[in-house]
Length: 630
Image (tube, rainbow, N blue to C red; front, side):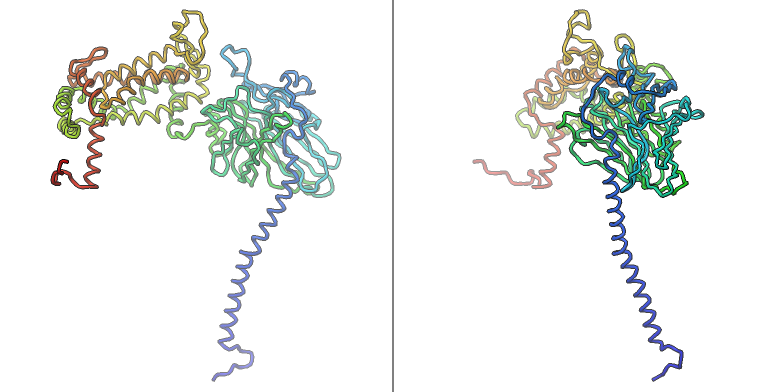
């Protein structure tokens, strides 16, 4: 047995020491990771929750409202005191030195109606019929007692500029306790306000503030329609997700909060947008909320706000926070430009392209490109319709050839129905054999129709949301392609001077669309099922009644699409030697339709599939001995 020399360790002792050190490090790492870190996180979250709870009331843009005033907008603006005016050719309005809110913004190039008498008003001050405004600034940290600017703060004008980037407006306010707050406000040549908030600490001690911005509105917008297919409510893109919140979703519900270093948030209407674009760095809290004041007969305050992390400012130091406010029309090229300039993710989704984004976004591009080329949105719709018909031409060509073949074999189909009228099973088999012999596929006509469904809805979405379509004239009586055709067949398109209810306003373009739908039906072979025949007979009238209340631009698209389909199908039928009977039918066709009307209601292709399934499950009945008759 060996012994250690003085000052030397036994090998087993070295091994034990190494094991001890490794285990100690492992235990420390496990303790730090699974015990200390969660405790630290919980403590940090608790502190943050305490702080946020204490500042919650301070970051409501219009707290403790006792009475919901609904005064005329101009009257409120006159009572607001000193205001600084701006006008860049696209936006005009003013900024009150009291509160320094953005609460008076008008869109100079857009009007409420075709009469062009009233411009679209985006922001309006508190106390008006539709209060809607934006603000930015600072919120105090926990247990702070010093004053910060609020909606009643009277700011001093340090620089009375013209709101341009080269000559901005500069406002200043001192809280009397060593803190000086400064706002630098400018408006670019389009629709973006930039507000730089600064605070200089000369109090002799550290102070903690939270940078804060908000857009708020009391009540829902004027002419609000919660059934519209374009989102109207609060909107934001945070954490890689588009968040669209309806006004009803927020009432009586807790605030929706998201934390991220990147994103944007605001309010969306069909054609208009107000949004906050913060600096895309450092974590921020994005909130969407509504106050619950209906019991006091006060409209809820809907608010979207962004709060930054706590900023501690040492005495003698200055803190700065910059926020961009987009206020204006949803111009896609402008949204894309700001997205690129400020590194904002998916600012284009402020336009509600919907779930068919992969179609609506390209359609929007093509439509606006054709409009730039022609100067008429109706012509642009027609050009896009031609392009879409060319895109589906090969599939439609196959289907129309199949339809033509069905028309061509009508005599043989009639003969089979007469021969096997009492034996449904045998007749279906013979019909399938006929289809296979003549290379006819009765189901082929469904494919282009199925393909047109998403195209139709994508076109409707684009026509509905495209800003340039608003109040865009076509030819003749169509002065607004985004509105329904104003004429009606029930007053002879205006010849009889009577007003009709909206559901009877079936205009000239819906009638044109219906005519082409009926012609297209005449070119198709008769349905193989009596119920289907009845449905298809009345389908054009039903669609005309429904679409008469839709945008005229959509009806123009559908009418021209049907017209091109008719021309394509008629050309194919003529090239294959199939006679065309629009308003009269051949004797064979009449007899075939009568046979269908009184014959079996099972489509031959469906019957063949049914028999294949039965054969797979139960075997071939032809190989079984015949059953005894009872």
